[in-house]
Length: 192
Image (cartoon, rainbow, N blue to C red):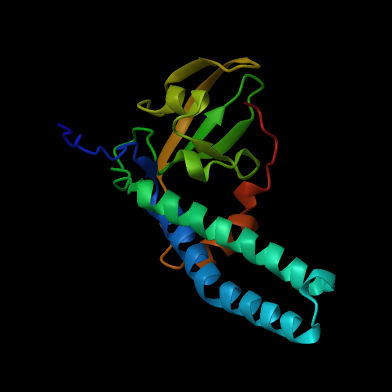
């Protein structure tokens, strides 16, 4: 006699900021509407242009791009399905996901970083994952605390000088534009 095993869905939710979730959702919407329609039209035009599909380079290129688009749509859908939006930072001065922290390095230079979910990390834009060694070391600390962490390449010690909640953009396009324009994002040195 066979009995059915209960199915278990992985519960590995991925913590993400509201801003990160909105950006992913916006990208998915753009890909599933505009980009998919434009590539579909391109495939149709390429099919009409040649009777022999195997000799139609434009068609093969369009089909490759369509496959890559569908793969990205699948990735985004999966990430959104696994995403759990973090509660907004409490504003209590404790470093957590959704906060912007200032750290004073040994040379006295103060650098600012945003603590974000793993899928949102971008060290070049000063966005550090809360699950990375540096993010884990900072989490739970307040301004004035000394933080010490060993990364695979370095042993780093710094002072946490500020902790502020991130302002959440209501419009993903505004948030994306501002991310590249902020003077605070000019510093691209990755210390960690």
